[in-house]
Length: 194
Image (cartoon, rainbow, N blue to C red; front, side):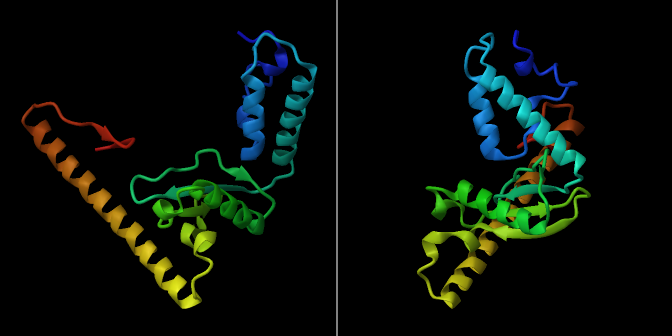
């Protein structure tokens, strides 16, 4: 149990400080604060955390739009449940580039076909960012060659998604058949109900 009120998730009106912060870099720094002894009282941590919470509340009060960065990786993908408050679409585009480059780091070849879909608060797709479009390891290619390869990787992702959906359909069919016979069956796969 936290003895330090600044580190207690129940102290701030039920708002967990980790959820209050929008920037990935700030979240990493904040997580480091929690790795120490939960009972230890470090005034710098308290001031820092209080500042982060106030900053987050300020962003919400300013009415900044929230953007969601959903990953399409050829399988089930990863939806962004929390979103990120940013001033405008240009900032969302810059953030998407940073996220894509961070996810590709040291694995560019394996992840070039991935894509980020950026949506607004209503779930409307604003734009998508193919990882190949921001991959610096292929900057040396001629523009036409690069474009052909980017198109190839987009098609690779679309094919991988189609194969994934087909496999889920087969599993769903098997589950329906097993249910009709009163047998055990797989209920969910990759977090999706079959």
